[in-house]
Length: 277
Image (cartoon, rainbow, N blue to C red; front, side, top):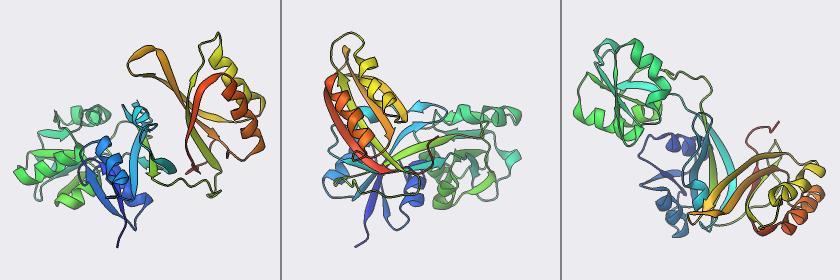
């Protein structure tokens, strides 16, 4: 039986592209929400989850860090997708025919220069892949979708223009999650350890908690804070470090972290998909 990997969105979404790139041997399972993605793995409907965590243009993906600690899942891998935006239209349409383009609210500003230059009006859709599906269903040669080439392939649309995004480096980072942890050393670019923690209510607690990583020469590639249960006084931190929990310097740093935190939870240990400078 073919294994399945769940993602949020409709077929043809960039998360679907991430699934195809990272796990080409698995069937991709579309889900309505991030919670549904997580539940599909918990229930056994899917074997893995593909969840976006951050984008180079728009920062972190809302709600993901809140969901991860209580998901019951473990990070086992990461994946990166270069977000290429393409103009997709029904067969027979030409670029000069297009008067309006439909896509997600986040994608439209990323190609504002292209749209303005050609006098194309942007129209907001809940999902870029959904926009592609609806353009195919309506069949109007004056309407286009801004989405991935995968979406065009799935819905039978023609690519009128490729890679129209204004920024040339827009990339989304995804985490691959499983019910079972995998702490084995693997990959070509070292290991990443992700964890969350809350600092104790003492002066300079965060500064002291971070000291062990500096003195032990550990590269912390991400540190983000977010509120817990809507409280301004309860702050949780999410961190990524380069290293494996069995590394002596990581052990020393995590031991020191324990002195200044109320709890520490490791979310996953996984190979870096690209070198960390």
